[in-house]
Length: 264
Ligand SMILES: [Fe+2]
Image 1 (cartoon, rainbow, N blue to C red):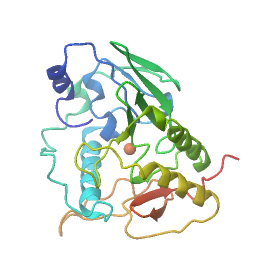
Image 2 (image 1 turned 180 degrees about the vertical axis):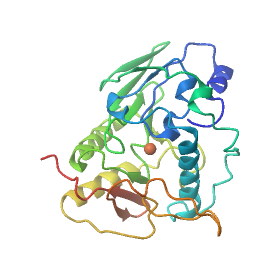
Image 3 (image 1 turned 135 degrees about the horizontal axis):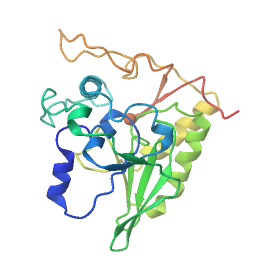
Image 4 (image 1 turned 90 degrees about the vertical axis):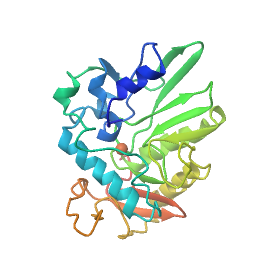
């Protein structure tokens, strides 16, 4: 969410009323929010303007492109998978319209899509304080936003709290066939995460809480500037986002705040 005319693209799919649910506040997930008259997102994530201004969003997109291109987590170049022009496909908030009405989301809240299809939101704090996942039991689909993936950054709440949320998602695994997250990595485009991803995250968090933290400086896209080209001098916008330690197990990367582990 963030590039081009999302509302127009949705209109091409359906004439039905649209419920816009934003899993967390980062600009690559909330960038087109003003194209809708009302949105649903956790109040905990109303800590920054929705969406960020156009220049910040361009910076964020460059950051994601840099991460996909330059980090060993994605050992191939997917920079050109999505053709776009940062100068024309990002509108300023004013161009997109007024701030939509925002509705809070409660844990377990059900969104009725009609025809017996219910999508349920569950709190999953960690990547942000207000991160949610959405479960569509009728299709066996868990939409994870940025809550679960192979290059996960957490720290918005104590790691212990995030671990509980991860274990709850795992306990729901009988209700879904796959987890679809918000970003691409090793997989064929559109494929769900492989079944090893969530159990490995849980194992890594348990190890971190047990004191088995193995700091790794390089490569790490959280706080590290990886240039897109020899002459690229743009800065990683997350450079100032607090302390992070990167852990790696197999193809899973997990960035945690080592000073924010337990709930006490
Ligand atoms: Fe995010």
